[in-house]
Structures are given as C-alpha cells and as structure tokens.
Image (cartoon, rainbow, N blue to C red; front, side, top):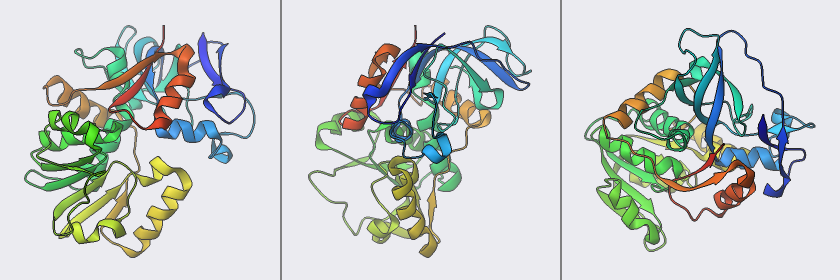
Length: 313
C-alpha cells in the first residue's frame, strides 16, 4: 500500500511516498481502506521532532491522525466489512497518511452519509477538541455568553457551530479578512483582532481559546465570577505552550487545558450535529497524498480558514 512517511525529522520536504505492507489487526480493531486524512498542528510538531522522545528517535515515521474510509476487515462487533467510517488515531501513534490503516474500533464511528470522505476526515480531531473543551471542560450550557478565539481556524470554526447548536451566545475573534466567513458560521458578535482588542469590560461565562495564543492571565478581567477559561495551548504550541498553560493552571482554579480523548461516543455526537444540519465542514484546500509537503507548508502559513485535507486514491 502507498503511504507518506518521513525517514528523518525536519521540514515538510522530508516526506516521501513509499510502499508499505498492509498492517494486521488485533481484537477490537478494524482495517480501513483510508480515503482521506487531514493535517493538524500536532502533525507538524511530530514531523519536526519536537516530541521525538515519545514518537521515536529513529526509523520511518508514518504520521496523521484523522481518517475516513471503508472497513476492509473487522475484529470488532461495532463494525462490519463495507461500513464507511471516520475517526482518529493518536497523533503520536500516527498512521493515517496511508491507503490502509488500523484503528481502534472505539475511536471510530459511522461516517455521516451527507459528508464526503474528505469532509468527514476534516472533523475528528478539531471536532472532539471543540466538543470536549466546551461541553465537558467548560460546562457550557444554553444561554451562556461564550468567547471563542481564532473562530475561523480548524478548531474554532467547529466550536462556533457547536456552541450555537447548544444555545450559546457566541462572540468570536478572527482576522479582518475572515470576518465574512465568521459571520456565516452564526457568530452573534465579532472582534477583528488585527483591528481592535477585546474590551476589558466585556464579560463571558466561558472563554474557549481555540487559537492557542492566550493564557488566563491575558483574559481574567473578561471572566464572570463562575466562568471557565479553556485552553488548547498545549496542543497548538507543543511543550512550551503546555508549560505556559500549566503555569497558569497552578495558580488558577478556573482554567482547564483540553486533553482531547478520542472516543466513539463523542464522534457520534458530532455525527448527530452533522446529520441534523447544525454542523457543516469547510475545507480550505484538499491535496493528494503525493503533495503532503505542500499541505504541511500551507498549515504552517496559518493564513487559511477551516481545514486542510488529504485525499488518498
């Protein structure tokens, strides 16, 4: 099978297309003919070798977490051959930049029928981060006033739609050039961060830092008495970001760092929102597997909105 691997840590140019044997599955796993994946900030962190002590010091590395495709073999009662699924593997484990992949059946769900494979593959990591960060960590409820930073990025644009679907009043921040896209997501109020700062007298019941650019110290004046600040900083900025956020966490009881947990239950919640028309996907650009390096370069440029996907023929 065809796969995009790196033999050495470094720039996007380290990617090579290579033929690999079909992986074998164990109990509780499924073999998938993978049709699409996507790129996430954690993928670039692994590619650069920032977490090599965890991902491995030597040997070929097969990256990628999000996937969507058709089940080829199953050792789980949850899926049968022919099922169209979507889900994700651990980003550190990787494996999704390939034609055939193995996945834990508890980290996959039936693909929403209305989504293409590429659209479905754009959703798992960002969708679970947004859902778990706001609903589980942030305890968001209907009527809450929610601030979402980076509301047109991969996590942010999904977070806006989830918050609106659950009845929140949403203020988003984004660049001025992406304001129209942000409006189309259903935001109630918008702040162009390159034109204005968030007013210090504006109060929120939940601040969800989808951009990963802030700490609670930056926004403590914007929190109501019982509010929560939820950060994605650890995932966005790697070890330094996690350290910055953890330092705040030591001194603040109202902050949480999203520790995204891949699981079928939450994937099915996302699928329900898609099937009900309350959650749509937006693909900034889709690249063939052979152009994975270009996809990584685009991700690092950070000038896009939505998600970058990989289609695997």
